[in-house]
Every structure is written in C-alpha cells, then in structure tokens.
Length: 403
Image (tube, rainbow, N blue to C red; front, top):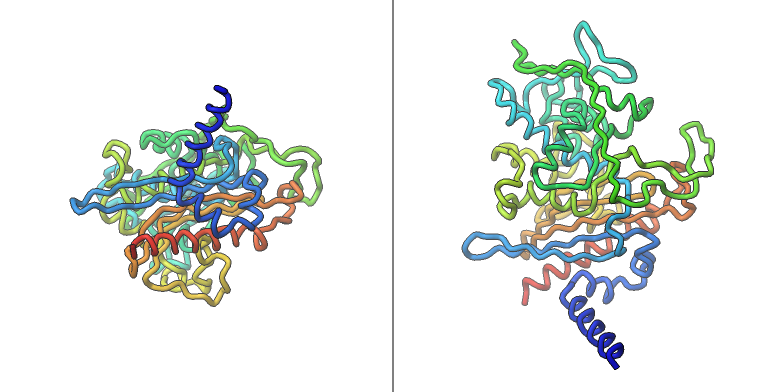
C-alpha cells in the first residue's frame, strides 16, 4: 500500500513540475514527432529557456526552464561558442590594465618585431577588412560575432591566454568549463597551443602595452564531466580512419549553463549580483551588444556577403538564405558547430510584442559515431531543431503577452 501511495505521490508531483515548465509543454504539444524530441538522449539535447519579466520598479525577474537529456555532466564540444567569453574578457582585461591610451580601438600586432614567436604561430600586423587597415580588439570582436571568424578568436586567445580566461570566468562565478586552445587552425597540438604570440598595442606613435611570448600550460581535467572520449572512431587530417574513441580530454568545454550565465552577464547584468559581473564599461556593453545582434549585411567594416541567418540558428537557421530577419527581432548570440555538435546561446527580443528571453541549446547529430569525417546530419536534424523550437518559443512568448 505504501509503495502504491508513493508511486501516486511521485506521479502527481511530476505532473505538476511538467505543467510548470512551458518548454516541456511546447515540445510535447508542437514538436513531439521530431527525431530529437522523440529521443533527446540519442541526440544529447540540452535546452535552457529563461523567461524575462521586467517589473514596474525596474527590477528584472528571471525564470529558467530546462529540457533534454537528464545527464547535464556529459561532455559536448562547444566549438565556436568559446569565442563569446574571449570577446568579453578581452574588454575586461583592457579595463583591468588601466593603461592610459589603451582601448578596444588601439592598433594590435601579434608576433612582430625582432623576436618572432615559435612556429606554428603566425604574425598579424594588418587587416584589410578594417577601416584603418590594422587589427584591434574591437575589430576582432566584430568579426568574431558577425561571422564567427576563427582568426579573430585565436588572436584574442593569444592576448589573454588560457590561465587568465579560465580564472576570470571562475571569479565571475562560472565554473566547470575549460578554455584550452585555438580553433579552426591547423598545425597545432596540445603542447604548441600552450605557446602564445607576443602582443603589442600601439596608438600610432607609442606602445602603451606589450607582452612577450609566453608558455601557458593551464589544464583542468574536468573530473566531473563524463564522456570526454566519444564515439567509435575518428578520421585523421590525412583521411585515415582510427577505430577508437575520439579524445576530447584536452579540448575546450563550456556547459549549457556556463553559456547561459556568460550571456546573461552581458545582456542583463542587472540580474546578476554585482560581485559576479564582468568588469565592463558602458561602451563595452554597446560594442558587444551591437556586434552580437547585427546581421552581416548591416556591417561596413568588415563587409560581408552573407545571409541574415548565417550565424543565427534559433528561429531562422532552417529558413531559405534569402530570408530577411525583421528589424524588430534582434538575436544577440553566439553559435558553434563542429564534430556534429551544434550549439547556440541567444538573447532574443521582439519589439512588436515586447517579448525578451534567453534560449541556449545544444544537439549532437553524428549517426555513424565517427568524428572528423564530415558526415553529420546538420541540415536534416540539427539546424531544423533550432529553427522549429525557436519559432515555437517565440510564438509562446508573443501569445503570453497578448493575454
């Protein structure tokens, strides 16, 4: 009798919890037949949806809902989403240094001078896509968000180094991740990623700040994160198939919660305790928010010929390339895609309805469980996951505000 009572009690409270989770309701009512909804464990789906409630007194109340696989400690490769904290922390580092004449617009040179860095690092002294013809922190941040430029992130990584990146996140209350290496560049291994280019800032006449070449061996094994060796095999860069799990133990990692909380500190810092905010000035927020929200066609420097949805997975990722995102809908986000993993961390606003919310999610589409072979179900399952679920949540937000 007690067992029956306990079963009924747990069923009752499970039903209540589900009823209080609009994300579950949306998926059950509208998206139940999709492959990822039918089998979230197989596709390693994790989604966080945060409702934003602005009160009359100016305060912000947040309510976060989760859906997906129950194992939140399972490893997934975050790909280019790691570029978001690098951009934020590059601005924070400039503020911490407090050097007169040093700003996001200062000219920035890597690996130049009489003592160039060790290979495979390469120097950077010009940038034809910038208005000045030279690189800067601000210009790299714009490139990084507008089209997920790999070199832009790698230059910020070389400026900051993994020790600073990880410790700065920890100081902001963000734990359990690992920023370890450059992305999208060949010739590096675990050891050579630890070498960092010399960096020099210039105001055109003098050098307000510079750093020599460094060897930064930061590493966190992330003992609480399971499954850092994935799949049944992987393909080498030479095309050889190795029939053993792919090793991610020295790869970058940020959890869905990490990405959510990093984004939150940029778009709604007032909702975060003061001691856990990033050290940013108002101009920094303006730079970041503009770069995160712009479509490629809205940028003159750099100039891009890319569709609106090129790095906007939620809502529009599965739409035709000629689709224009309405001016009233703004998506401040960072996406990542590699090894069959697709991830998007976004803050979405809709001017017409007043809707605003955070939507952060990841999905893994790698049916053959072979990594680095280029055979992934991005177009058939991955991108439609973001498009259909994103539209469903936006519809829910709009309807909620019409009540």
